[in-house]
Length: 337
Image (tube, rainbow, N blue to C red; front, side, top):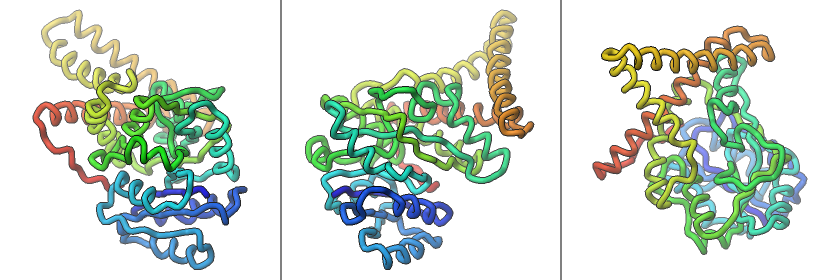
């Protein structure tokens, strides 16, 4: 038996498409259950799920009064009957062999405590803005060496994967998701896997269609929260999991300090504006390449702006996270999408 655990809140735009992709799985339905753990949605999400439940008894709806993802994940895992847990997201569509492939690789790969696939980030709608967001979230310039976003040619050991597959007994050994982490709870849990001697594998043949946020404001908020909680994750794990997480913070600090110092030194001013030009130029070149492929000329302008929003939001969040740790302040923020 495998249990699919999906935290949700106000997902009426996506939940029907998600359910369809689950119903099309080649895995036997009498050997799986789908646990929707809902933060008490106030749109039509619950009605859509209840309608699906009437036709499919393996679908269940669980209330999550705390509303955040780690609480939802823990509630789902604790209620699960399966020997395996697959963490899923309603913003995504999954290939028909998703469950069977994850379980096969979970058993075949040595010491595999978590296996997952590549996210193919797609625009939520047909606007150029949505296309720009999806392209930035798939770009090495935007995401660094986050292979589950940018892709890889072979199975590789990684620090994290999206929507992974675990043995249920793993949670008895190393604990559940940390409920103090509104964001990055997956990173912290995967860090615990590695610290306990386990291995995380990324499988490039498993490809998930993931729908990005539909506005720059939502994207900015999401990456601010990713940055905000990263120092707390590092503290809990005892060390940073990756080097790439520091680059947006260094970029932000360089932008601020370089801007101030450039008033006092022509040499620094030349370096500062050269670096800034190269950053914008790189974003524009990537925008131009995407514009030619998509026949959307405005991507040349949109993509540098989205790159800047993503990097500065993450960097500012990271800086605020460090200050909260130093000041022993609460990390509680509004986590709504």
